[in-house]
Image 1 (cartoon, rainbow, N blue to C red):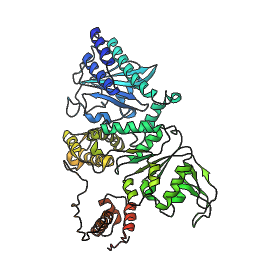
Image 2: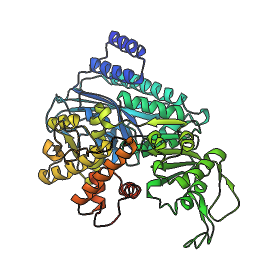
Image 3: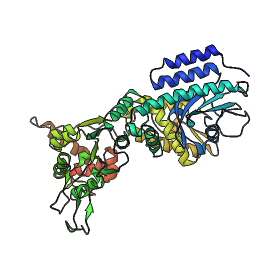
Image 4: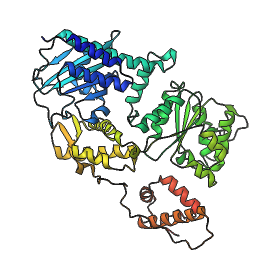
Length: 523
């Protein structure tokens, strides 16, 4: 059997020693492995208990990095994780290959080929897996066991170094397990992971890491569908309150008459319908975190009471004279420009400044196009599991369409596009194990800049030279809403969809503009 050349081993060690960042270290590791062992694809994966998460890839499609491989769905990976030594699969094995259809060197199904996996152990514990694939059958049969052990040891040391660097950033008492627990908890949730390697996403993750450990109030800003709730959940998971409750409240869904009660609670008989005493969301969140989604929709009358909580940490339930002290971290989110809302008199300036102690802006998907394929890979794997499909992949043409699209609906739109396309492709594919999504399944126009098909609005001719910008803006909004409502026959849900607004927000805006909320639209 072929032994690893000692000179090559020294070169590999020196190359890894010169690595600076974790990503660079992983890439150099895979490059070094391919120098030692001729293969068509190599992947480094982190072990997360129930699944394997790719950390670096070579020779596979870009979306592979966004996938998550659940061991119960991938028997080859499960066997590697259960082994204490390198595993070489027979070229004619009938076990499904997790990378079937994803190899750059082979379009379509993988033919008979070689597959090998190296379990990576540190201090007796499995921390990851290194997999190698070659289109040449029996390509790995002549490699000495000692060679594979050395490569596994180098890979495990590289992965362990990266893990230790992450742990050093966490609190000393929780350093050993915190990263694994948080990552695991995030991964088992639908859409529970911040995926992306673009500069915009790296900046966002840096902001989250910076402020998460403090108790600062955070204001998360961004368009609808960018993942503001996910950012809030990540902030909580990385905070000192991670083991306490995270209470979510959508302010846009609160009727003005019940908003104060929902936030701060009420006494029995405080108002009609208050048949029993009820704690508010702030009391439920005591000791933990409260997430106020769409905080820009709060009525002005309630904003002053929220300000009191932020200033003094005290709440007063409706119908009670006594106050209660609460220890709650506040994270708020909005898709509105609150600074503009303050200028227009729709939001309190003092509350805005209290909420935006540390503002975070979540980038739109069109600002981080290089993350599209990673996110697509994540949603492909998620959708495949939901629909019971062994393998979902993107055709080259479909990848091009995704990269060219402008994503007005952001990450949420991408998820829905993948889900719909998978259903259409499955219907056409019949009993195939590997289903490829084609451009026609996505139903996205190349280079499209909007998800809607409405003609561009025509600005109204406002014949009054002394008209203020605020009045002109409100007049234009009023005309647009009336026009869309007329087109939809008074269907507020459909009108809200065409205007890219939440239905409750549209109704509230219409009321402020003096538009009657009736089935038949009146100007």
